[in-house]
Structures are given as C-alpha cells and as structure tokens.
Length: 173
View: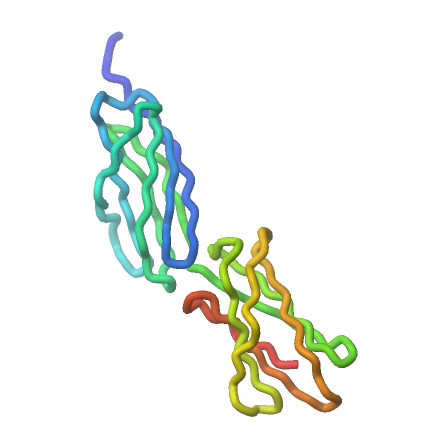
C-alpha cells in the first residue's frame, strides 16, 4: 500500500550548566518541514512547544535554549507525525571529596552537565577565617578537577567550588 512515510527522528542532547543543545537527524521529512522541540522542566506538569527549527538539506537539525541551572529538563522533537525519544538533561552538579596528604589538602572534584574547559573557582576558609578566593581551576575532559592547598600543622580548611553559580557542598579537612 502506498501511504505517507512517517518521518524517523533521532537526536542527542547535551547540557552545559544553563545551555541545552541538541543535534538530530530526520529521515523522510516532508519537503520544507521543520522540527518542533517539546520541553518540560522540573516542576511543570506538561511539555510545551518551543520555536520550530528548520531541517537542513542533509536532514539534520540543531537546537539550543537556556534553562535555569537548578532545573532538570526533558525534551523530545516532533516533525509531521514523527517523534524522537524523550531525552533528559539533569541539573548540573559539582561535588568534591578530599584528604590530607602530609602538609597538603588535596580535593578532587567531579561535575555533571558542566562542559570541559569550564572555570572552577575555589572559595576556602582556613581555621574559620575570612573566605578566600583561590586560583581558578579548569574542568578536565573527564569532568574532574583537583585543588591543592598547603596546610600548617593543626590547620582546618573548608572549601567550596563554584562553576557559574553551581556550588558544591563544603569539604572540610
């Protein structure tokens, strides 16, 4: 039977703190068709349609939008009667654990949905004193970073890490 082809969509979603980005491919889209993103943020009860994006001559499309850094996001894409799988991007996170090695505090951090190359700002206090801004660090390709700080005997240091408003819980050594 001859009928209308249902377009097939596939897409991947990435997140860098407040920026969602998707790349997708559509097969058998009607001529001149566009892809409509359907977005649902944490706390919303339904998906809402975003601004449609054009499908390239090779069948590909790209899409991006900003979203609050404290929100999970779900997205799927529609064209004609075709639909992609629902993709999820969790809220970005930074976490850290540390240890004392001789006279050095060593704290290892890891990130979720924060891109490699992002700047990490350590803020620390020694013995409960005034907060000090440490030298910026860089998120590595694996999402990790390492902070080291010299300690005198008996010093207690507490450090938090800030990446564009995403802050870790404090680590005390």
